[in-house]
Length: 291
Length: 208
Image (tube, rainbow over all chains, first blue to last red):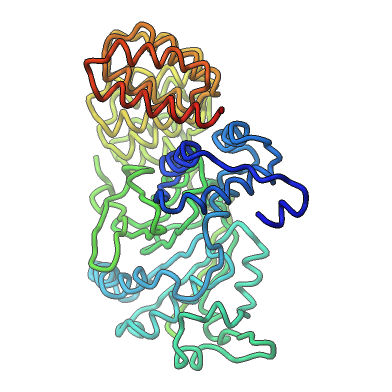
């Protein structure tokens, strides 16, 4: 905010009721919850957006937000969230994958059939590589199956970064030295190159979640990691995305969302599965061929 | 490493398979197989000519996820005809079906607006409550006007509460006199004056 004030843009301070109005809107729209104690934080972020959008007042800004003009909801949510991604970011879901999901999947799967895992959106690749490393490190049956990891994003520049597999030291902050030693090579400038074998393990592709034609290329996944993207969609896009994801999963397959997201807020297509490590959604087995 | 790669098919190839499998998506809506009906509904999304067939299918469909796909298909068409198909399902006894229809209609504010006056005057109070939720996605001037008109005549406290809740988010200063009047009319129903006070604070706080 100080920067904006330095630039001659006066700060807009929100009343308590305006903060609550924004919080309720964001909760209803995205599922994100902000406590009253974070009022000052919210005030500053919204004030920044009022300045950037040149709205002039909270009322004008709130109208822009409600209509989602120029993807304002996404901009505001981005202002609230830490956008950086890193390896093993949602470790509890990775633990759930190896402690519960894969056991259920292989129970009904022929050993000759590949286990298919999809990371969408995969951004710059930290998530799909994390999945691959986690499987290597934590799943005793990893060598008994063929495993296919597909990583997709709408942003081709992000895909390019993922395919190159070079990361900053910060992206590796959750990995142990042993794991870094096994899967990365240090480069000059505190950068790390991921092991070529791991790069070769992940197939990077372009995909748009709300384009049904595009999504028709992706079928029969056992697990989909789809985190922190549905909250940005409007109601109609979320419905379409949920149906597309349903089609992409095999019956009985699982979908992992971000911690502030709930598929039951979006669609009744999926069943809620509560595991010890995480809440995961499942395409019901019984739907296949239901009359 | 145990990882393998397979080629992801081109969209044209996959869609070709889907079209081949569904030579007539409208006929496929009547298939005995639920997955075929699901695929048919997904294929027909956005095709205005399919509205009568989708309407007929929705009236007969018993499988929830296929119902959802039909509702989404109508939402993707999004014209007046598809809205007219969806509106009667606001009276559905199935809560998930009502929710799906509300969500679809909320995505179509322009197409829904011409129906709002009659929905908010519906003899069924449950429909009026759901209709207040539809005003949430309308431009603030339209939603404020419609909800104030409702509040001025509405006798059912739950309907008023639903309208007040929406006004707390989308209402403008023009709603303040109607809100105060509503609080006075329902002074004996404590939750409503409280809800009104919250809405007034929100609106006043926003516009002061």
